Length: 355
Image (cartoon, rainbow, N blue to C red; front, side):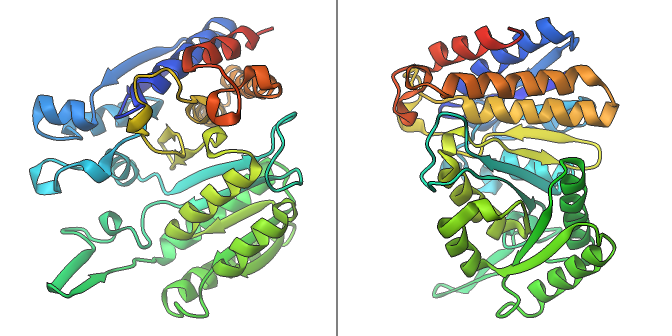
């Protein structure tokens, strides 16, 4: 199994190192035959080569079985014309990673703010929507005709809408989930979300064995707070999914525990939901759970794609180890109310894999 590892910025190097220690342990237990290539991105690459995302990085990502991407600090990058590309967006577009899969579930022994156990998955469209770097073939999707007027283009396509909803139904069927909730704002965005909703209804009609419902996005945000446990699989457009997934993750316990996988037909990238947290970088206090869980999702994706049991078993073992460590206050990092540092937490996870 060949993996590309991209450390990123801020706490990226620390939590990537922690994740790869866990992956090497899984390799030794389950025989994954792991081969790892590392390349610089972000500020490290900018300093060395004048760009935050060198062209060889995308080529390398296309040649491996999967990629592990550390957090990036792209808000602080220089303009694109000066080399400040967003590596996350570039990978999503360059590899056609149209599905961003974000589970949110309460963990045993860790009380969730929502007050009720929840176990849902948000399936978010990943390559279009309100994101300006994914709206145009040439040039940005935002522009200013005058100093006092800013405009942004939202791109919604029939192909993109159809395939993300199909992905949600496929995930529901594979995980034996009972219901799809399609989230939209077609009451206001009548044309763009109207098209998305039309596609969702067509896919739902072809899958009558799975329950289907629709919610307007602002109502959905309130309903998640009221009782997130009533939802199962949520499918929506790019920006709505980005916002709702962070909300759901916090309701389930913490964004620090939230895994995420960017997946397409032929490629996948594991990426933590949270940011690069430069204020705590290098202090051994970052929680690596999100990226470790994301790497487990990547293993499960590779195993399913190859129809191999070892990566799937390794993924389940990593998830079980995370659950066991987080279940007691003594096993938690500071952001979760514990005292463990990044390395000590990772040691605890490693000790439980294969035992």
